[in-house]
Image 1: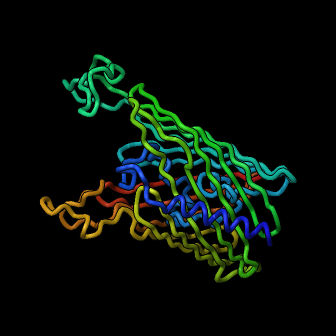
Image 2: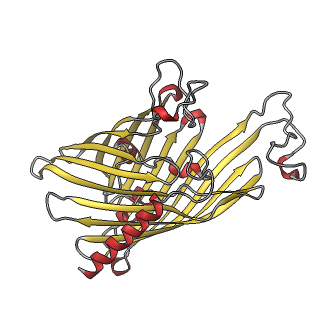
Length: 357
């Protein structure tokens, strides 16, 4: 009980940190953080569930969400490979491997990459132009040409998780983050923390996570804070019949990014015959715009979102997907798919393959 109280106290302290108003000018505004790729959901199942994933366990992809959720039995291994055809032709891919080591817990290693190669700088455009907020001393911005260039974000991470009791699991992740824009790089280190607690009723679980606690990414001596995120969530099985393999699960997350408004994610998952899963979720207030955030002169929102005609006021809302679990050659093989509609930015398709042995 003392341990549980300590965990709850720590969670409250972290939530205060995440909800606190940033002290530096501009940090409280959406879109100004560095390492924005860290906000992109990893894993088709997680995204199909509307990112209401804080309270899920037994998934290698949880190392990218709540590190406490990667716990495995001793000797068990999971491998997760994720492909995401992201907007604007960006490639967003991730790989994670976890293994249970008994008393010391479960260890995982993962990598996330967002990249685009051969970006056309535009025929005749001069890349020697220095942005207005820099002076002529920043020679690194110039390369003397107007050819194509590349963009790449990478996060390498090591995750640990352990079942402290038969109900409580704790986890932590350390990660190295790097961004490269046309040969100009910035890097930082960050930590994630997570906890899961089983309530002992209908497989109900509550979870909490704090992501991207670390230093700034710095380009040209200008620092950009990492996208600090705090989430609490819960999941419960409304119906579970082991004989028929039928299960219905409801999930919900409340999330507060430091650079934006509070968000609510809700989802449902229906499992049939222990083999097929159907999922759907919705993100409430995701990139939404209030009337008081509309520019009076132009009539456009002051956030990064822009609307044309009667386009919806959210970039992302409804998500859905499916998964198939098929034993194959001694492996438990799971293939998941997720679809997300970004409105005027088009739709996004994700596919994940997970092996457990």
